[in-house]
Image (cartoon, rainbow, N blue to C red; front, side):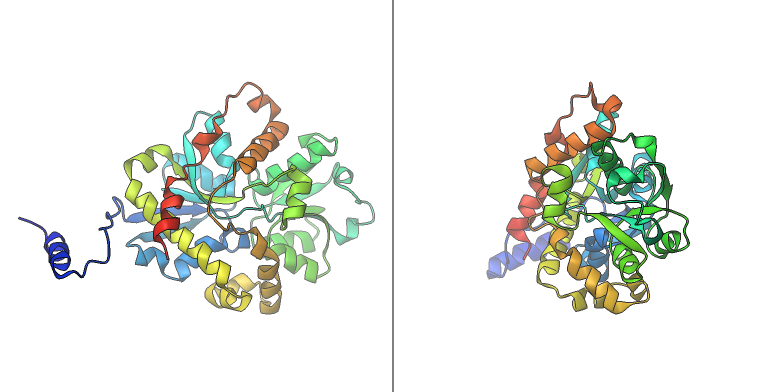
Length: 341
């Protein structure tokens, strides 16, 4: 017997009311998504997709698991406790080197948005990245993009990866407290944490990767940031689910393009403001350039990310044969661009 849905579709076609080709239903509708620091503006597209109801619109029941940093969210994906992760693109390359097939399906951030800053009481001693030798640097979590990006800058400045100590300070208020209580000498972090620390007079900015100019100064090119990534075998087994997820994030990126800082502040949980709405609005405005316009990762960005990993982990990548094309499957976002309005 034909299903009610099939009969209804046939009836609509007969009446000339069908809006277009039928959209295949997701294979899996209940999903777990991992993230490392959800209140950070780096992951704003994830929060907005949830708060604007776009997951529900797509027929998806999504639970978001917030971990202490991107490396922990990655571990959850490898361990099987989450189905997908919004995290740094570089993890897809690092996992390929380790024999794990992980691929991104949409770019969410086109610039890292990471700011490296020194605590104000150390500012007279630290004028350049090289001056961070021997200091304690706060990052979201060891192994996360804030950590690896800082290691890259140390190496470029002629230091070694272990010439500074890295301390996981998490996201949000815990990161602010770590700096303001003197637990770290410097910090590599994201907005709104950086804008809060700056407004409090607690830091002096050394490197700002919230802009294209700042990003190119560090990496010599563009550098993709947050993406949605999944295990390749999940993508292969659940293409309609992956398409639905990609559609949600593409729709969210288009919403961000037209949104004002006030509209974004109104959409996120109030605790994300870190107790200061005006400050949050300023942080949002500063972060607008970081969000992807197309959802596509440019080849230049893939190449610069691999070069960055080769510099920070030379032993791991010296003999590796990385297939950059296997780190990003652009089929889904290209389809989103055609169908999502």
